Length: 162
Image 1: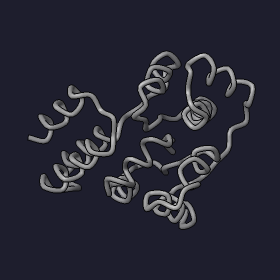
Image 2 (image 1 turned 120 degrees about the horizontal axis):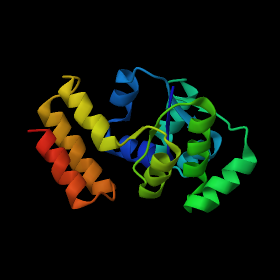
Image 3 (image 1 turned 180 degrees about the horizontal axis):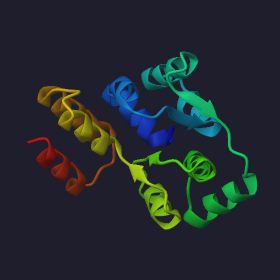
């Protein structure tokens, strides 16, 4: 099992790589209840994809137990509800997180939670020959369009795809 936060699952759905990532992950992709609510409350294309994948059980939805720690982590790291809940879920289940949120990454580093990003998953998919170079370039361009990545992250991802 691996958790994913709101920004990452929305980005992957918008970029058209969510299904490929789900299919090729070794672990079951999991979102928390708050992340499900955050990502499916609008009637957007990405929200519909996420909702459908949960209904199909391609993505599992779970809750957290420690609400006191949720509030502390949220306040201490100045996180949104979804990111804080995802981090608590990771701590409770000793699993990693897919996140593209800088504050969540910093929290993961301090709390010793392993994490990866959407561009890293895209690169890994390409290097494992799960997607073509053309597909990888197309998805990276979409991630660039929809995400808030630094020039450095995008440049590094482009170099990895060469």
